[in-house]
Length: 85
Image 1 (cartoon, rainbow, N blue to C red):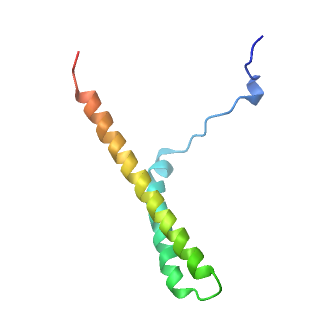
Image 2 (spheres, rainbow, N blue to C red):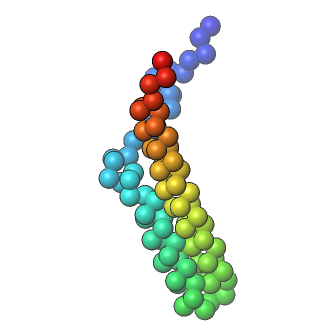
C-alpha cells in the first residue's frame, strides 16, 4: 500500500516574491521601533508593557533573520569558491 497523499491533499510550498522576502527583516525592525516608541506614549492599562514586549520581539526577530541570512550567504559564497576536490 502506498502512504502517499492524493494531489489535492499534498502540502504546497509557499512562495513570496523576492522584494517582499528581502524586505521582511527591515519591516520587522521598523515595526519594533514603532512599538518601542509607542510604549513611551501609551498610558492605558497594560498597553505600554504590551507595546514594549512586542517591540523587543520584533527587533530581536528582525535582527536574527537579518544576521542568519547574512551568515548563510557568506557561508554559501565561500563554499562556492572552494575547490577541494
